[in-house]
Image: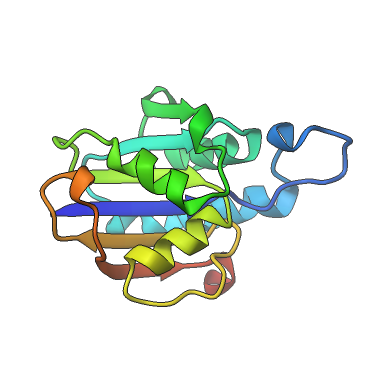
Length: 161
């Protein structure tokens, strides 16, 4: 059994003339990341592997989750290849997770996340909101055998306000 948690990065700022990769979180994004992270603690497994897109907004979201869930920031693996909007690339990355890892937490980007959770979860989500948290349980022993699973939890910031 594998458990996959996908978090779309929180709301980012468009105020500065930056490259998309370098856009930081805006104030609302920072607040939403703290809000969601503070509400999912009881739903988190005791141990998990954490991967994040290396893009600034995803990395900042992952670091806020680390702060709220009390796991070390240096446990986050920042991956350039997770800066993707393609669910097929996201699928290949997830399939590369080591099989001794039962729980994988991934911080990434839309459209990849919404399309992925609709392909692999059993509940349709029109759009995974910024800082949306989706947990899917998959009945497989290897990440390479990734198949449709059960969407166990969906939390969006608006649900908590």
